[in-house]
Length: 441
Image (cartoon, rainbow, N blue to C red; front, side, top):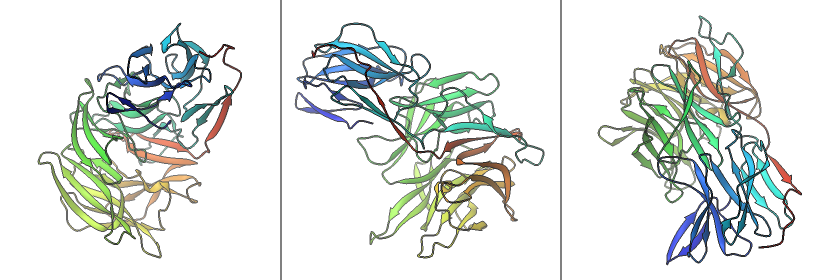
């Protein structure tokens, strides 16, 4: 993403995201939502002397990431108006459009950033490690995977993450990465119909965590991050209207979080530097939505992922040793209200990405699911389960050369859903000789 540009307007500083300054310094092009009811963004041009603002690209689609051509005669931008992310341009004269938008290159894929050189070459980054997809797999009578996983979401492939099943199992909510922001999507599993929730807050994500359903099936817990305020905020977002209510803000770093199935509590792990500043640990916290009261359940260890039992009475968590030896990691279960914990699994240290957002209870509360990478962070990830009552861990039948996140078994016990993020490098591409030969404006 481009660095924000600060423009002085009538003695007030205005932060413009995804902004681009024209070559002559007279105008700033930027993208922004047209109103609070939609996440779709249009392209605007603002005079740097604050004399006028012009809408130069307007459509129901997402139009984002404006970049000026070297001579200032065009603005290049990304749009999903054709169903895939493509590169478009619009001719500009004196800060205003002189014609309709034109397609430059179709199917650009999901881009991370764009920049234009003085000779008219467009450079852009296609991220490698951020190309997640959502999969499902059938389960046998033993609740182990019986058939290879298949794509559960085929729209905007390589851009979908954080799957969450509704309490009745009829819907799948997830985050979908679009140019200029992250869309909140709800998919009907029976029909495949999808709709974007017109969220009033900008959807954020850490470690592949996506939206989480409240028990009424009408609203979702959504994480957001404000560039003007440190930390993270949790909102309750109505699925139909997108209306958002802020529930909690924390200015510390998050390692993991979960909404209890009864919708009454948010459990999360929060980074806490020591008084000496040399050792970083975390706290395990619960936040009761009814009383707005925060309670510290545990501290002094490195708590990472958490998972709440279906009856909301038990809390499972993952601890990574932080001592000099870092000899092991373990999974434990404790009462959700607080109290003594019981270890259910201990293994070699979790030092890779598989320690984040990989814990889940089975609907019958007999097992805790977890993921471990077999050979460091670049090896295959394997889905496991361990009995809550005690016993050896066993593989579930899924091993993929990718990071497996957000596993969740459907209430009918016949399917499991999860997201997968392949381990692949980012690529820098260059697009040349595509601009028309025109004089500088």
